[in-house]
Image 1 (cartoon, rainbow, N blue to C red):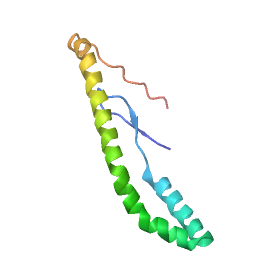
Image 2 (cartoon, helix red, strand yellow):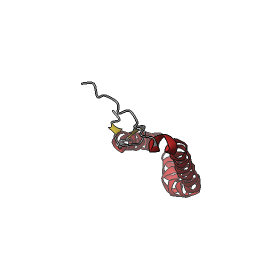
Image 3 (cartoon, rainbow, N blue to C red):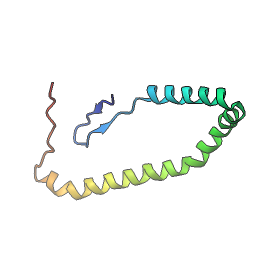
Image 4 (cartoon, rainbow, N blue to C red):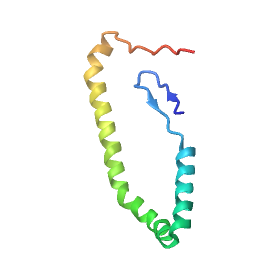
Length: 93
């Protein structure tokens, strides 16, 4: 279950837990290795190159995320200067 990361003055974002995702990937690769070992070895060799090809798109995504966060902060600046405080969600439990 993904927990929530609370940062004062920021929107709550889910924290990803890589454990299950990694386990699923290893089990899927083992299954592929049993069914078709040449394809599994090709995937193992090709994965770093695919990661390198996708890296610029991740950087663009991070850049746009930062840009939209900056624009949101800029748009809410007058309200913050007038004393508006973001609501903190109440934790039920």
